[in-house]
Length: 99
Image 1: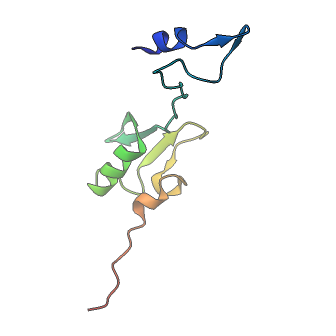
Image 2: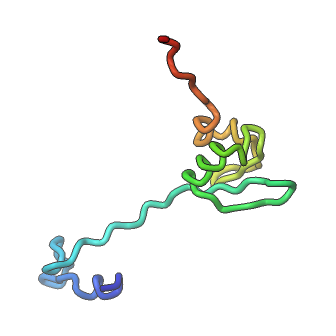
């Protein structure tokens, strides 16, 4: 059943939409928008990438703290390690030295 079908099957009571979903249907929830990032590789803009993809690229060394990135809400491109949502990608912690 598609979204359109689900919308059509919602119940209306007294001319107003009921808060209860039609039998067997799950209420629609708006999708959660995830931030998407753009970066520069070898002088070329690439993206969009999800945060998970950015984490993977940082782990593999494909992006560094100095790579320029941009995401919605930023007025200019900035180094990845200065973008609050990305700083944790580059803060490697060492395990405790309890040997």
